Amino acid sequence: MPSISFTELKLPSPVTQLHSRLLNEKKVELFIKRDELIHPVLQGNKWRKLKYNLLEANIQKQKTLLSFGGAYSNHLHALAFAGQHFGFHTIGIIRGEKPANLNPCLQDMKNWGMQLKYIKRVDYKQKETDKFIHTLQKEFGDFHLIPEGGNNLQGIKGCAELLDELDQEYDVICSEVGSGTMLSSIITHNKNLNTHVLGFVVMKNHQLEDEIRNRINTHKNINTKWSLIHNYHLGGFAKANTELHQFISNFKTEFGIQLEPVYSGKMLYGIFDLISKDHFKPGTRILAIHGGGLQGLRGYPEFYPQTRNSNFNYK
Image (tube, rainbow, N blue to C red; front, side, top):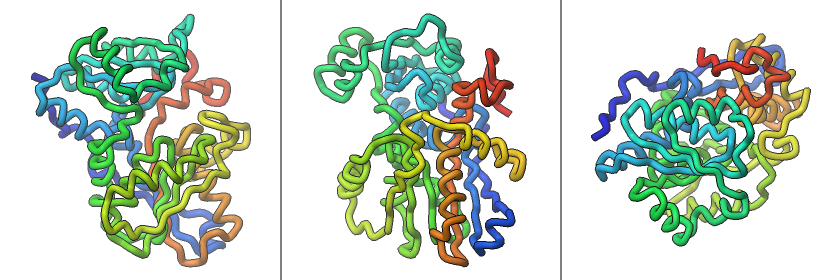
């Protein structure tokens, strides 16, 4: 059986306070929960979502893990590494046709032993149906199923541990929002009723409010204030522009923290834009959760030439 040991992970991840002229001028305090530092590969919420899924598979004595994602999926990237590291066989169901040449993310997955299966996008939409899962079981045999992005009860449980690591209180906690797992976890497990949880949506999805509301309604006595910001997805998932890339470059120069343009870059870009527009009253303490996923930089080699045709620099 696989052996599960997490001793090499950097937990709790540190919190860094940022200092800038804008923050001083607006009298806003901004902190970043540095989940990108948890591990060179098992970064951020991808690790937090996997932790209890791996433990559950181990308890069930299941040696094979199967999950879903796109060709640049941070989730599958982390799962493939975790499978190799902890001794699981992994299967990744990839949305879309097989590319003529594997991108760096897919190549990593393959190098780490993940079995890749590419399916048409129309079929991918059926991935949560019993019929589709049964088809996969007939093809691959028995496996432990992890939903796309680790979006299940085990994923939420792992994300909730982030709150236990905080030793200060914040008026606003900001999260990147893709599947909404991290945001849902913070909403349902937050104990400070004065905290407003703010989600920065990284794609076009105006059904997210209803999806998150339906998810958290399974919990009793939820009193956390929360809202979503849809103004910074820049046209859709993984869409970016020159201004965002310049912001990421300037952010690294000024604060020494690397962001990426799919998740953390959009969130911090939005936070700073809102601060400049006096969205937050003076004295507000904001915590932004850096969700990792830095391997995503390789999807934009024209802006990050150091990642071109090379393995991801995890440092």
